[in-house]
Image 1 (cartoon, rainbow, N blue to C red):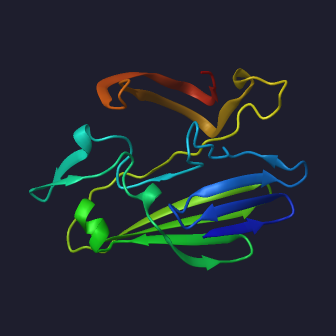
Image 2: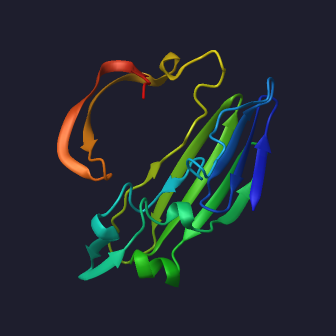
Length: 198
């Protein structure tokens, strides 16, 4: 089911399937900022990656002395979340462990996803709760896809990501098959801007 949330500046929609944002629209010009989910290229908009980020070799991993299988990026993006609540400026969804999730990920958990809008921004909050009687292992990530370039007279290189403070970080190198190569490369060097390019 699709839910919407809006104020005077933006409107967002999100689905219970994957708790995925489907749209971020600026109301003044009607500009859509999120990828349209064209399945010819990529059917998602902004999937939640949980309890893994990336691919597993042969889709398999070992935990608690057993072998389990998980698809690329885990269960989050392919699971039905429960609608929890909605206010004037936020909406919350939950994915909770079940018999089905335990077959692929043997831990008891609750994953809450909250979207809050304020003026022309969207804040996304992830809250993983351990409901088990043991430590749980997980990764969590986001994979939002933005329309870029937005205007016909622009190119991708006109865009950049801006952080709220200067960052320094290397980055993990990924193979063409999507696996970590165990090599690292220079990433951000004391900057708050990441230029975009193909």
